[in-house]
Length: 166
Picture (tube, one colour):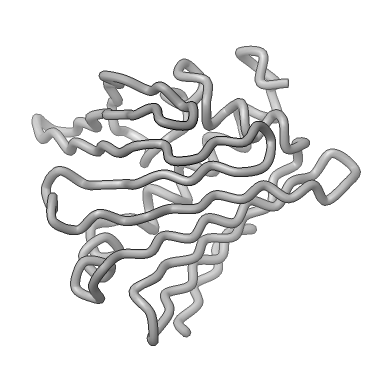
């Protein structure tokens, strides 16, 4: 396994399975981290790399719901979409994830929130793609930058306790 560590973020690319695992701890309880993922306004404030504008077309984060958003920078648009297969408050989100620039490479993602006590949460996100080429395409497309910068923005949002992220 290849492991890249940034401040509190671990991204693991499995050599045997077309999978990426991201582990990140937050100084906030699971209900706040969960709400930042499911609340449309909060999600739009932290997701993705710095400097990207985001337009959310839909974000119905419930079992059976769907989402689509577009990130833009320098006149370029990058669309993403998927379906929420299972949503359990404060503990689990299972969804598909597709970058519209690579529509044949759909990932199945499982996001688990673990209460560490003392107002801390460990988020473990596992993304499984049906091919190594698809997985490697996601990783090569700047996923690491988007993940790290997005989680830095989420840290700031949670620290400020804005938007009712409680």
